[in-house]
Length: 333
Image (tube, rainbow, N blue to C red; front, side, top):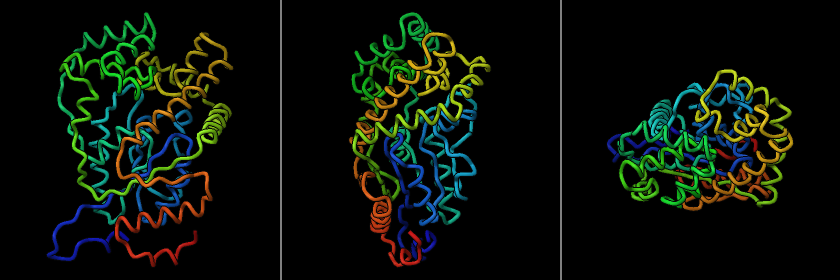
């Protein structure tokens, strides 16, 4: 399908297509992405900042290999939880994957809910080398250990309110990095992001999934219950047995910090589960807030009929990429 879209010989070079599917956690991106990928001969690039880590499957709602229905998935299980994987690393990996997928005549398709990661690729953000200050980082880590993640997050909110809204207090690594950027440059992380260009090197088609807030929250709570049944506690136990430092990504991710607190005897299991549900609802709210600041998103309400939503998405993609819709008649939707 994508090969037919290539410019005729001698014609001006065109931007290569890039399909993107975003939405809050538990909205239904995974199921929808598989159907879209099969119809459009696409390969999926995970746009989730946590699914890059091996051994973190249940808490990240990672799609298992036997559930991918033959669709290639990229940027999943590519590094260990001890590793530091940044948005710049993601941008580099995703950009390389897009080039490789396009060369194979397939459609590159980013699916995920980490807004900054997705935007960094869509608009090829330039990441300045602001340097680092290891002593400053360690000072912030000690402060968080002594006074709590909320207290450190309050430091960030005081100098960079926008970053404070977007970053969860438990996301210690990114909170410290945002503070470090301000410490090193005198400019907030949000100011640096605001100065980025919004001109994409790709022919973008961005689909956003949303649904009634009450229904989304119900789905989030059901997902947490399922994670507990699937063995989230054992998954966190295995990570703790690796003696990961408290500031490691694995210990800051949703589900991991809450269960670690329970396993350390800091709270009851019931309290840990309720806190996880609450924090996941808040995370979904922050995701939606981020997406609302992105431009040119075609929103689909997932509260409607799934079949009709899928047909609407096919129409949006065909219109954006100027593809003949005749292929739809040959599909079994």
